[in-house]
Each structure stands twice: as C-alpha cells, then as structure tokens.
Image 1: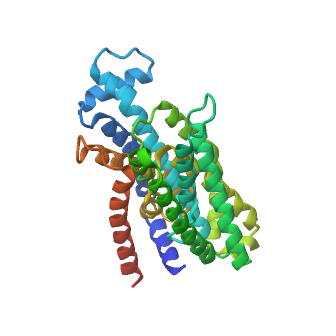
Image 2: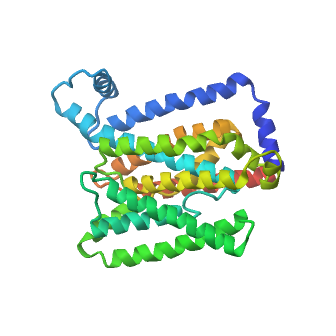
Image 3: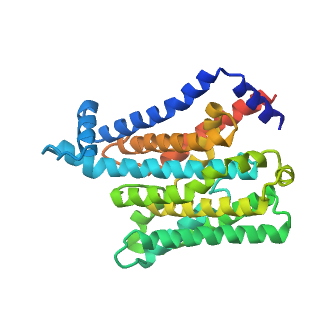
Length: 354
C-alpha cells in the first residue's frame, strides 16, 4: 500500500500537461505502429505508398491495380487489425484482473482461463466442430465454453478451500489448473497424428491467415465484453484499498467480481480461439502502462488497450521478419520479450521498495 501511495503521489505531482501529453501520444503511437506493421514484411512497401493505399481504401476509392495494394488490403491489413485487437483484449483483461485481485501476477493465464480456452479450441479443431454457415463460431464457442467452465471450476475449488475466496487461494488453484490442462493439451497433441504440426503451431500462438472476419469478430467481442471492464474503473480503484474497505463504501463486491471475471473469461476465450495461446501480454503490459498513467484504473484500462495493441503488433512484425521467410510463432516472441520486460520491471520495483 505504501508503494502504491508513493506512485500515486509521484504521478499527481507531475504537471498536468505532461500527463496529458503522455496519454495523447498513445493513440498517435498506435497509428504509427499500425502503418509500419502494414508496410513492413517479407516484401517491404514504402510508408508513403502504404499510407496512400490505406487512405484511398478508407475513403472508398477503388484500389489502384498492382501487387502492393493486394498485399496491403487482402493480406497484411486484416492480419494486423486482428493482432491489434487481440493484444488490446488480452492487455485489458490483465489490467482488470490485476486490479480486481490486487496481485501483479494475476491475468487470464494465472487463473487457468487461457489454458481452458486453449483446451476447448484444440478439441474443436481436432473434432472438426463447426456451426453451419459460421466458420469461426465453432472454435470460438468451444473456447468460450471451456474458458467459462474453467473459471467456474477454479472458483468452486477455491470456495471449497476458502469460503472468503481470497486472492491467494484463487491464484493457487488457477496455477494448479493451468498445469493440469497443459498436460491434457500435450496428450491431445501426442494423439493428433497428421494434424500435429498445424496444431502445435497454433498452440504457440499465431494469427497467420487472419482475415477481416476474424478482425470484425474480435472487434465485436472487445466492444461487448470490454465495455463492462472499462465501466467498472471506480470499483477497481476501490478494490485497491481491500475488499472490506470496498464493501464499506458501498461496492457490491461479489457482483462486481463475477461481472469482471465473466467478461474476462469470455474475452479471453474469443481471443484464444482467434490467435491461439499468446502469453505475457496481459501480465506485462499493465505494469508498463502504470508507469505512464499511474495506478488509477480510469486511465490505466484505456491506456492498456492501446499499449497492448502496439505491443502485439510489434511482436507480430518481429515474428514475420526476423527469420524471413520463416515465420516464428507469435506466442514464442511475446514470451521471450515479455519475460525480459517482466524481469526488468520486478528489478526496478524491488529497487524502489528497498
């Protein structure tokens, strides 16, 4: 609590124009990264030419004939938009869970939601489960169902052990459940036969081949499931003072907990069904965002959405270009970069605490 108070005081002592300049720079950074990630790849296209093609498409003008427009509008743009939205969703979920549980290690992976969603999506792929006329819905439905079931199971087990549903108990059960589902996924991979390679690549995270349907589906999910998270910023600020204090000032603790957890499980389930298992985004980005915005969730949640999208777009660009023409799994890149960031953040935090 003392370190949180010091961070809040430090942030509030900054000039108002400096704080707003930092926040206003995030949308500009997002647009610049979007343009760069669309332009760069195995075949790089000049930024000016890329901007002109995107501007014409935005105004509804017919694209000029040529390979460049085809690459940008049919391959790269839908993929980059999907990556941006998945990164925004994962980061938002991580920020909300860390605020709700008052634990810097909390995110969808910690609670077993991500691993449950991955297990459901893997089963849908292996069983060929689809809904007629809705190619994305089958995997998404299984992923969301298993994510929600995983959350309910973790909460039920935590409640059986601790009637107060303390944060430490929930996280402990979530970690154990994640290890259990990981073993089940390894077992499924060992029996996947000819589907081993694409299935393994998907479990490591990938948005290869993502189109406008995936981007639109992810956008709708982010709006529907992300809105309740953004709307509960006051309650998340109250949770920072402890559940008892939040209850004393009129926060319906159990209702808010369930609302946020359900929204997080749905959003993570859909994100996993589209992009596979992508780690460290929801864990690291909220920490980086706090350095910019301070601990208030009014600024933190929205800024996490923007920075999460930027981070995952840059990771996807690295996955596409570092060993071109070989493409690295996106989840591997985020884990490598995220682990380094997280060690640096923990080192700096311990240094300030000392």
